[in-house]
Every structure is written in C-alpha cells, then in structure tokens.
Length: 199
Length: 199
DNA sequence: ATGGTTTTATGATCCTAATCATAAAAAAGT
DNA sequence: ACTTTTTTATGATTAGGATCATAAAACCAT
Image (cartoon, rainbow over all chains, first blue to last red; front, side, top):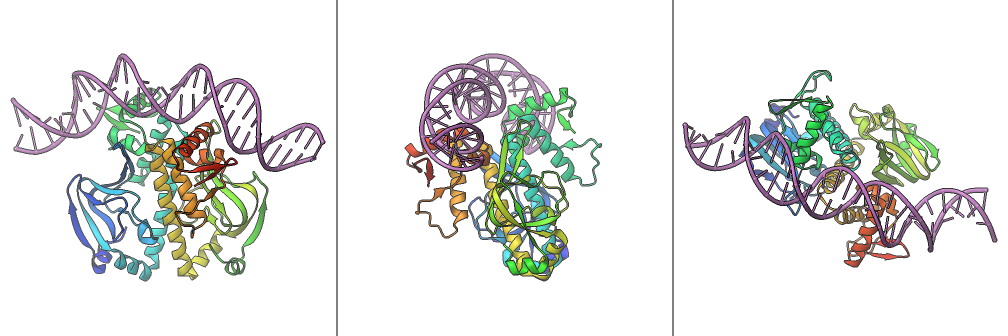
C-alpha cells in the first residue's frame, strides 16, 4: 500500500510476529498503522464459546486495521499472525501526517476503505440470506479476484485456504464446508485435486 | 454531511421519491452522490426467495451509496425509500471535485467510511457467530448510539424500527424477533410499552 | 523413521430458528 | 365509518446445519 521509502522516511519499523501471536486485540486503542511485509495476518473475532469469525486475511503489501485511525473507536477485532510474519508498524500521528502531506496516498486509502466496505456489504448479506454453498462460492470468487488481480475469470484458481478457514470466513462449521464443497464438485462448480480446491 | 450551501454551489438538486420507490439498483453504476434532505432511505438486498437484508437506514442529513464513487465497482445493494423522501443528488464528477478542493470534507468522508466499516465488521461477526437475542441487542444499541449521538447509555431509547425491520437488519425472521424481544423483556434487557420497544 | 499435530472425512443425532398457519390489533387509505 | 394493509402475536411442525464421535490421511518437527 505505502511504498517502503515513504514508510522508512516516516519512521516505520519492521516487527516480527510468530505464528499465533496477536498484534492487537479487539477493544484496544489503535496506535499504529500496519502493513504486511511478509507472511499472513488475519483479523478475527471469537465469541464466548470460542467460535471464530475471520474478518479478513492480509498478505504481502496489504495494510489492515486503519479504520480506527480515521475515526474515534476501538478495534472491532483482533489481529493474529497465521504464519510467522514481518509487519511494518508506523505510529498513528506519523501516518496521519503522511496522508495529510500526500493527497494521493490519502485518496488511495479512501478507495481501499470503500472496497473493503463493498466486500463486507456482500458478505453480511450473503451470510444472512444465503445458504452454505452459495456463501462458499462467493468467498472463493472473492479470493480468486483479490489475491491475483490480473487473474481471468476463466482461469482456474487454486484455493490456499483450509476448510476451517473457509468456515470461519463464512460463519459455517468445518463439517458443513467439507460437505458443501463435495456437493459443489458434483455440480461442477469447482473441482478437488488431492484435497485442494480449484475454482 | 455536506452543508446545503456547498451542495447548491456544486450543482446538487433535490429529488423526490415516493415510499417504496428505488433510487438505484444493486449492480448498477454509481453516477451520483446522495444525501437525505428529509425522509428515510434504506439500502438493501433481496435473495432469490425475496428475503431482504437491510444494509443500513439513512435519515436526515445522512449520505449513502458513496463507496462506489471512490473505487471502481457497481452498487452492492439497492436504495429504496422507506417513506416519501427528498434527497440531494450531486453528479459524481462534481462531488469528487468538491472533495478535491476541500480536504476537510474529504477527511470527513474517510471517517464516515471508517465508521461504517466498523459497524459492518461488528454486524457480520454478530450474524455469523451470535444467537438471535445477542444480535438484536447489538442492533438496538447501535441505533440508540447512532440516531441520537448525545444520548447517554443510561437513557431509555425508543426504538422506531418495526419487528420486520429488525429481522431484516439481523438476518432473522419476524417471528424469531418477536419471540426474542419477549424473552429479552423478561430478562430485563429492554421493555415494551404499547408494542414499542424501549432500550 | 517416528510421534505429534493438523486437516480432511463421514456417519448419527440433536436442536434451534425457519416455516407454516392463523388471527387479532393497529394504522393507513378512501 | 369502513375497507385494506401493515404490524404484532402465538402455536405446531419441519428442516438444515450444528454438534458429537471417530478415524484416516497428510503434514511437520526432530
């Protein structure tokens, strides 16, 4: 999102996180801008019984957790490293100053927020009105489109998500995801090759 | 959101919509900035069977449907008048020009998007992991906080939403909402006075 | 290679919210 | 005032996904 030169000039530092480590917790105050240098970070919620909901997964170059920097509220979710990762960390004030001095970057973040809102609007509507198979297809198509922007729709995309992650992204349970995926394969909506899903 | 003087100077016009009329449809291209002058507008989705999901309800002074103006995508939902309404309409280009010339306004919109993202993050997590009563309380608290920003938490708030609207906001069915509200009343989480909910 | 963990898999059972049916009360329209 | 529509209400039944239980396959660390 922000190029390395600007990051370094603004005073960003690289932080390492081990798999399973939390960068911040739901309900805490936002103090930094974060951008993945390498690895994989997820933002998620756990309910009382420990059921997880994954708000989003962020890979190389992606930023996350900016919304609370723009308005006055606490983090609505945790940030947790899926695998060992390195993440740029820039203090809030320096981030906002950077935006102020670079309208272009500011505009880019507005677009990013808008796009994320679009994704959330789709997911919440899906989850509340659609059945499992439909939801899963939506998530798959989202990842297909998002993780590789110049991927054509006709190309087959290898899904790098586990069944459990798909469940946590769609509000379903693993077993339901496994069964739905099988049905979707029968219907020809996707195919499975040594346990990996292709769409 | 944008003051009337700026709106008029930029070339905005007031449009009237009858109850039930659509301002735009899911999947169409965004051409205008919209801001409620008076009345009530909802953004929503319908699934194949006609089940509705309400993305948001917008009243006096609130803007809606801006995200697609900032990034390149189609409307993820419809905009429909809940009651007879009047809405400011400003062409996309003029809106973007206005933002460009007024960094203050631009920043305000970024905050608005951030806040809306916050609300969506909460709702999608609620809907996918929480049970009916929990979800309903969340929506009530959101409306309490949002429709009257200087309302204290200890004040009792009169909910102006129908049971059906609550259902469409939480992904539940009317009957479930009615029953859950009764249970919540027994638990002392809210009270009902001639059919109106107070929280 | 070995042992431990994670992921995928499948059958059986349960439970909760959806669905179906029906109606009364309230609000809105003529 | 009277009809129509909307909203709230309640009981009975159903169904779909969650839950429970168990295990094999794949992956990983040493």
